[in-house]
Image (cartoon, rainbow, N blue to C red; front, side):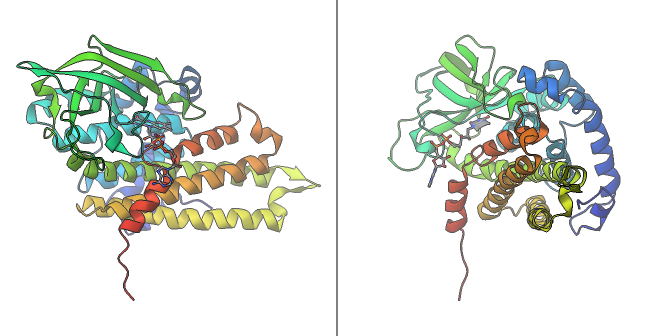
Length: 388
Ligand SMILES: Cc1cc2nc3c(=O)[nH]c(=O)nc-3n(C[C@H](O)[C@H](O)[C@H](O)COP(=O)(O)OP(=O)(O)OC[C@H]3O[C@@H](n4cnc5c(N)ncnc54)[C@H](O)[C@@H]3O)c2cc1C
């Protein structure tokens, strides 16, 4: 029912040694994530020693571009396949979504100062873009760093929700550095690297329905000093940077969700074969078989599209429409699969501590975080270029 490590070698987007690489990643995640993930869910974070263990195994340092990203795609799918979307969100934000801003727009000093410590897990990084009034519509951005002197700027405002919020040492933060010149679009914004331990930074947990180990917080900034050397990329030109980084974020979120669907399908497939109703396994019923068959068919299509999108990114050719299609389809399939998973588990799937319930809670975050499904549909429509 699900593609195994060996069959992956036949995928057109596979690289040399793909199968062995996938096996190794699966083995490392089984050691460094699975034995601890329930505890991380309970404590709502990956603890410092968990981050360091991931770093020591090399799991926080796969590449963001070129052929290296094909290895990342395998890692991200396998991370999603652990079935713990909170863990995958925390690691995804740290090693990919937030780190990508440094990779893409950081100075040589910023890269040398932060990236090795991010890859080793010594330093945890968060990405603070969203605000109460600025989620899908970033033109409402209110956090500002308008006042400046010769040594730097002062950040004021509130970011929420922010994954890795309480554990972060570094916060890649979107701020307004110039008064908006237009009602529409994001103008006059910049990215800054905020030291999370600076005076004036206050972090408060904001417990979520799901993705519990993602350590989601509200972060308040009150006159937080950032030096001029903490500006990331071009001043007042964050929109240009975000357009590139958000496509990457959606690619990553989509591949992670593909792994999540894989995990949920495996749980569902095992359950319907084993659980008996009316003297026969659920899987003996045609309605059940066909429901699972539809999900498997959708999964295989989305999974292939995910690797196609990863390959396009590796060629420097990822476009917003492709990233949005993947993010939309993978996260919506995760919701559908999790709903079927709970349904066929019956009451035992609705129990608080069950894996089916965790998939169900987690899946609903996927269609909101990293761009709501409706925004993805807008982007897909914008990219439509078919001719009669
Ligand atoms: C678990 C979790 C972790 C997160 N982590 C981070 C993080 O680390 N850093 C960060 O910066 N942000 C984070 N976010 C925030 C996330 O990026 C935002 O939730 C997302 O961008 C949507 O913004 P919003 O929630 O403000 O919804 P809004 O923009 O207020 O939209 C509300 C709803 O309106 C609908 N909608 C929106 N736009 C349209 C449209 N054009 N047409 C029709 N309907 C529409 C959608 O259904 C949407 O869900 C996280 C969110 C979650 C759930």
